[in-house]
Image (cartoon, rainbow, N blue to C red; front, side):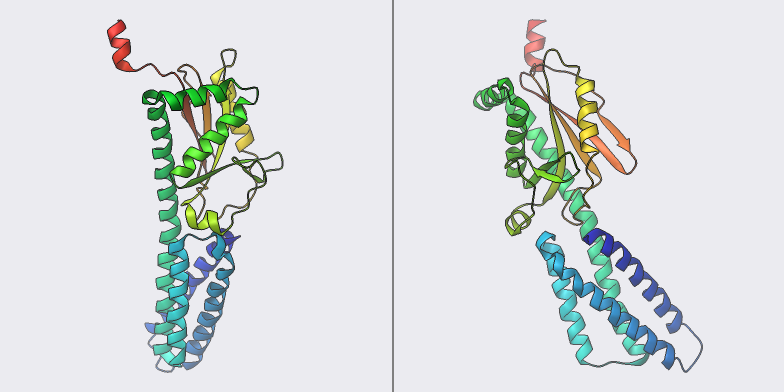
Length: 281
């Protein structure tokens, strides 16, 4: 997967930069043999960078742009057939610049997805307070025999309106499309039309249910996820346990398990507005 390949390639570029720095500061006058080796190593690394293009269908647009710029820079520099220390400096600078940008894009992408998810759930929670029509739609879905499936589909469509494609995991740990119900395949439309993917597990909290017990079930199901994350397009550090109930309830808000943070999101269909509670008191 892209994440695994890029992590290894990023470390490889760091090693090239360190070796180049050593050569450039070396007091030896004739470093021809060493520079030739470094230039060849740079070219091999560039070939590996260009091979990342096979993942363009799952890359965010900014990452694709960065990869295209790298190829243009590299091809233009290669035409000059620069050798020696000058060649080392030119090729190393291009690799280092690309690495810096690509690493930043991956980190920045997770931040963008995380913020959009937070806004989407806040928007849904507040909309259920002020929009009777929306609240009735969710209450009807909640009351259905297949209420969990209906609510998760409504929730997934709402997240999609905020540019986030939500999925869940099946029994063998693969991505399942919350809306369509089949195995999720990230095609060009999803890659171009959304900021990224996020793993969610939805559970209903009915009168006879204990909210914390439902959260634990949701977390167990989310933990089955075993597919490699789509780096630069998936929020891999956080997973969301969404609990939908008619009345307000409390659950453990967050739980960290290794590198993954599981966030509990309570969706209350009939939330008591503070102003109403105050007037009744």
